[in-house]
Length: 433
Ligand code: NAP
Image 1 (cartoon, rainbow, N blue to C red):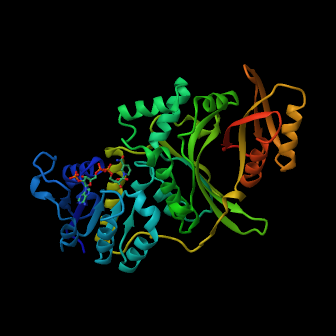
Image 2 (image 1 turned 180 degrees about the vertical axis):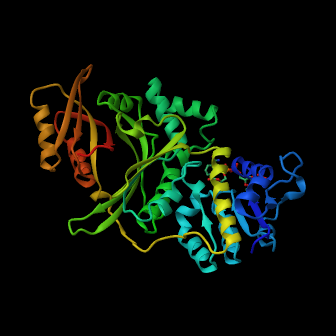
Image 3 (image 1 turned 120 degrees about the horizontal axis):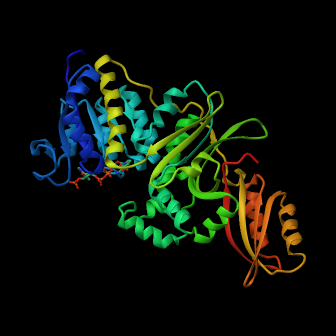
């Protein structure tokens, strides 16, 4: 195999694809030395061809399938996004013995199984480091560096848009809608921000992380999801009052039942994080992921989770690895799904709650509220009361309890005579109790 050329097809020339193509052309001498063979860009698939796209126009094509099918293409880099036509393109590449590098979390979150099976049966690589947290290496550490360890928890800030919004709300005290509009103006939020602010993007990444961490196929549909659009300036201020901040977290956790059997909890929601926790200080559009493994302990990965250049760095790292494998023979490690752990029901998830209520300021309110928590076996950690114009606001922070017990408690609080309204319910993560 030595001295052969490695032909590369890039599908897409947008934010990520244009950086991938540019670096492939500019760094060809270095890549040749790193791979042990020339890495040649055969073509780039786009929707519209024009001379001002930053790469020679004769490399552009609108026929992605024909580019994938070329005999001189060994590796297909997919940076188009979405499900179709890329699922079909990737499957045809894998089935014809080509390695694939993709940054497409939406596709992987639902179709990893199908794609991994195709890669396995053709004995080729399917790499996707860029699909989770852009430039941050976390897929390879989970698949390879920690392959000898037992991962128990992966908690991350994996969506830059929502982290930008929540950080700005915490810094300025501004309302969600105002900060979202500002994020749009600055280019941190898409015209339709739903995938980011409602947690769909983070849920796709949580599915990928949970699959890797627990050797189990997890899809986006398995991930419990809540977004940040209901978070108010009052929630952020209330979090501050108990030395916390609010972050949208993707949490993948091994839950060990009373019978000793492990199951997987994968969830995405905005949660209070203590200011002393490393994730509390991840601000702006940055991402960070904390991995807890039995022997390694706690590891933290931090950096730029999006952007053309940072994401291209991950894509090109995968491309070089796949190219090396083709030059030297064999393939890298593929999907590991031997454990096939069951998903843990959301109601069984252990968590803590931060509950805000408007109450009538009179004797007996506190004990009535405390009794309601006790009735559901939920132990209280902190109670904070403030007088307001309409009575009092009461904040209760609980110890660890199951999600089901906490939800039942909150539901019954609203029926108490002196509780006028339960104004906010947020989970508290990143503490032991
Ligand atoms: P983008 O800017 O929207 O670019 C998409 C590209 O795909 C465009 O060049 C478009 O062509 C091309 N395209 C669309 N449909 C096509 C088709 N049917 N045939 C051929 N080409 C087609 O997207 P992006 O931001 O670069 O993202 C690409 C992928 O990377 C997505 O999966 C995304 O989730 C992932 N990703 C992105 C980031 C980021 O920061 N942007 C970070 C991590 C992962 P035209 O240019 O001709 O319209």
